[in-house]
Image (cartoon, rainbow, N blue to C red; front, side, top):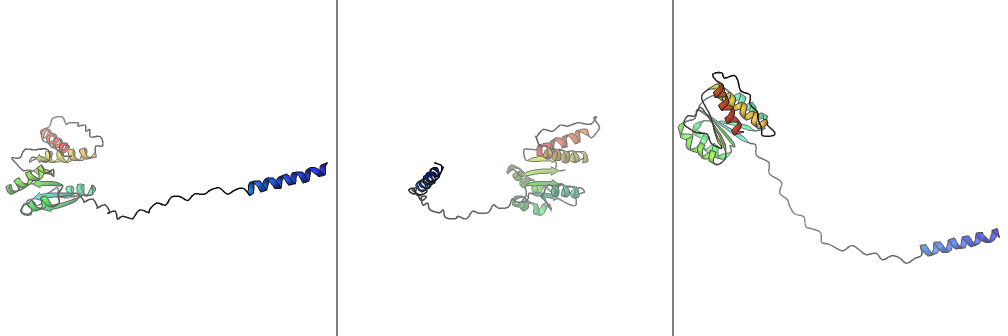
Amino acid sequence: MHQRKFPQAAALLVVTAALFGCGTPGTQTAPPLTPTPASTLVPRPSATPIPQVLLIADGPVAWEGDLNRWVADRGWQLEVADPSTASTRIEESAQVVAVVSAQEMLRAELLRAAVKGIAVVLIDFPGVDPGPSLSTIGNGKYDQAGFLAGVTIGLASQTGWVGQVTATGGPDEADYSAGFAQGLLWS
């Protein structure tokens, strides 16, 4: 009986293989044809312009080097102009205008620039009240130092909150504190 089982098992295996291997082919459907989208030209984004700081001064400014380093550290550019050519430059490229002892003829252009949202800082420029885009600094060194400290701290703050520790009431504390507050407002 052993001999009969082997041929029967082999025959069953051949029949099974034939049934599974020779079945009807499945129906294959081709994917639907969709039109290829036409290529379109996408304009390259324009480079962001480098912010310009325009310094208007009647003559040499002692702290211009410090301002130039501060501006360069932020990736900005400092441009220096005298008051006679400054009125056209304000409209052209400046985002920030700093004016040191400027002539009276610039007053209208500076106020117009401040209204347009260009930040204007007037240094030693009497008779102008500060506003939203217009900051003023008086005649002392302490208020200028306070202003620069206020701007620097305001720009460095990541939360918008700034704490201030004041001095013990020395003769220049009011000037420094006023300059610091203006610097914070400006930043």
